[in-house]
Image 1 (spheres, one colour):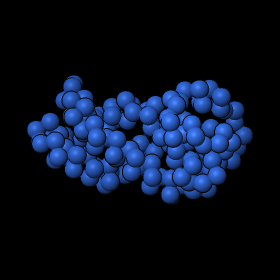
Image 2 (cartoon, rainbow, N blue to C red):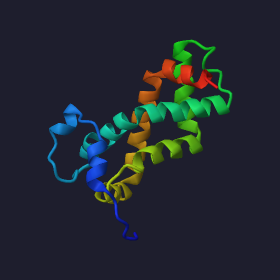
Image 3 (spheres, helix red, strand yellow):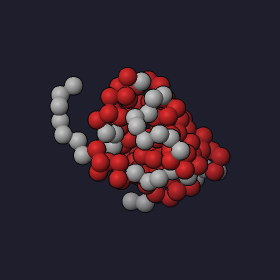
Image 4 (cartoon, one colour):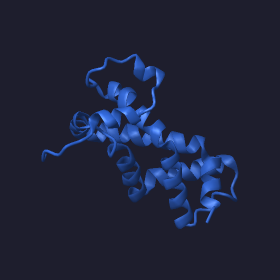
Length: 141
């Protein structure tokens, strides 16, 4: 991988503090579970408004009838959308990986498939839990 300067301290400063992440050691995460709590959860919390906006934009562009269905059906539709649409999945992964430090990205590359699976599970749960907000955002022009 080519050397490129990354503002690692600035990237860390952006992230909100999460109670479970505060209990972990300050050095680089040793396991995928540590990485999940120390890196993925804080970044997802930071990127939550952008995640909802990206999914809502996708729903709007693809004419998914999210506003007209019951809340449980909204959650089901959003889950299917995030599970089946490769373009949306890669966009969600990019929202998070773009905020990794150099060391975190190196760890991510070593555990890419497991971390992508967990990242998409967390993202899907987040979007489904906020289905009403996604529906409202998708109905705006």
